[in-house]
Each structure stands twice: as structure tokens, then as C-alpha cells.
Length: 178
Image (cartoon, rainbow, N blue to C red; front, side, top):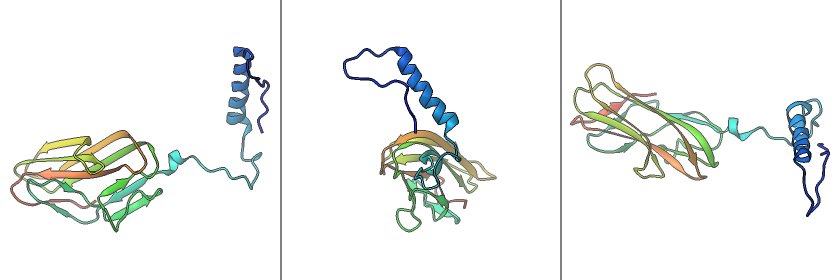
């Protein structure tokens, strides 16, 4: 336990030295005195959620994207999902933030090689076209077009994003698996 050197009563003047002394005691206990050795084996101390909340969803098959139609990218597989953020059964195109906070969100799509038109993708918030990140390329012959995106964004609990793509090649164009 932490014993503070100063306690304060209502309607008394608090000196900065007293506050600093309390802060220093707490800081030192947190950073040096609390170790695995002096924490009881039965203590209920949970690890920081910051490192534990994450999700990696992907599609292991191609997905056909019709020409001139905004289409939500679906994810039929997961590498991991520590906070029930994604389902491979329903709403497979959503990542739902079950815990409010700031997140680093990354996405990438790779269109199959196309010779005409443009392609774009965006991360839409809560089923709208409100883009929190956006990427556009002009199609070219040869290898497929990669659209990487990434953003730091603060989400409320129950907010969700979709990765939305669009292309205008005149015919369906596949997204590559992965």
C-alpha cells in the first residue's frame, strides 16, 4: 500500500511542496516499488487494455467489385480478435469498437490488374460515407493496384467501420485475397 506523507483537510491551504511530495511518493511506488515479488499471487490485477484490444480480419478469397458501385469489403477470416470486434458470420464487413478509445486503424485492398478507369477505397464510419480515411488511384495495366490506408481515430463504444471500395473499369474487378 502507498502511505502519503501529507493528508489534507477541508478549507486549509495546501503548499506546492506537500503536493509534490505526495506525487513523488506515488510516482516512485508505481515505477520502482511495485514488482511481481511484492504483489500477492491472489491479487486481481488486470493487464492494461491498451495492449490487449486488437483485431486482424481478412478475406482469404477474391471478392468481385461491380463497376460504378460502392461495395463493402467482406472479411471471412480472422488472425485474432481480442475484444469481439468482428464476426465471420454476420456483418462480416464491419469492425465494431466494443471499447471506446483511440485506435490505430489500418486497411489495404489490392485490386486485380485493370487497364482502365479509377479505383478508390475509404473507411466509412457507422455505415455512412463519412470517410475517416480515403485512397484513390488510376488503374494501370500490369500488376494490381494496392490501396493502403491508416489513421488514428477516437471511437465511441459501438462505433464501427467498413472498408468500402469503388471502381469504374466498365466491368467487375476482383479484389485479391489476403
